Image (cartoon, rainbow, N blue to C red; front, side):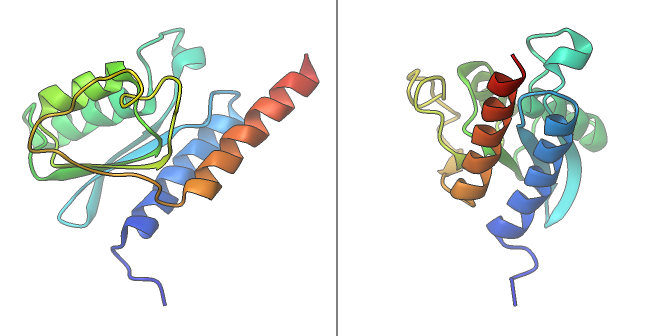
Length: 149
């Protein structure tokens, strides 16, 4: 039986968000923010719907979590995101002082690691959680997108 509060468990929640983005024609990235094994924020990409390049899943989730907690710092929180954060999202995660970033698929061309962006020195990073599930959803999205054009 799967550990109820494992990284895989929460990444599946982020994947549900990514599937919602996919169904709306958004790049399928989902995120959830957790504190004390409780989901306090969830989101997915909304850049097309909101016509806003900053409406990434992580940015939406950071805002929701800060609102829930009543403060701008996410020091005891973990974010689970299906794709390695970009440098914009990594910058926001840096300023939020989030405790842990857990991502599924790496973004070898636009991810924060490739771009040389740093997270807060105390932030832990765990990559590759359900990587193939996260990666396959992204691949499926772009294959379908190409076939429609």
